[in-house]
Amino acid sequence: MSEDLASQSCTPCRGGIPPLTPDEAEALLQQAPGWNLEDGATRLERRFTFGNFAQALAFVNGVGQLAEAQGHHPEISFGWGHATVSWRTKKIKGLHRNDFIMAVKTSEIAAGQGGAG
Image (tube, rainbow, N blue to C red; front, side, top):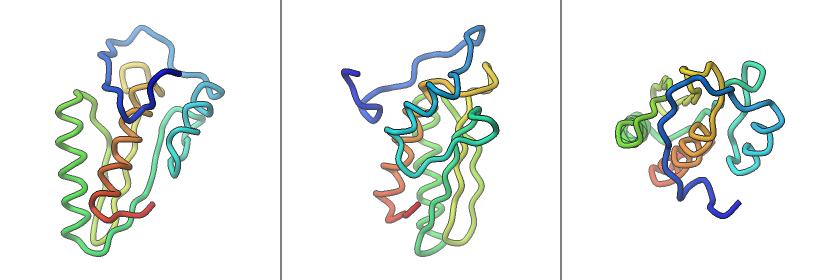
């Protein structure tokens, strides 16, 4: 692989392509430490912890800005000192390389906000 995931951008996914196989997802997961495959390897998820509500909110806002810029949007739940982010490509009902790109970028945002996972 010539580029690491963090340096890549999402490519448009219009559907009609198969989602990653569990083996393909497991291989990409090696580049996304702290993330877990869920729902039969059709979704990526990670819980992050923060020192307070303001840090968790700043993280969620950062992920929201990234999602808008990349045109790929996660499911996020958060509260005082924590946030859980879930990536999945809804158009293909599973995982795409874009989900792993976004997971790695999400982890970078968390690190910048003092988050642990």
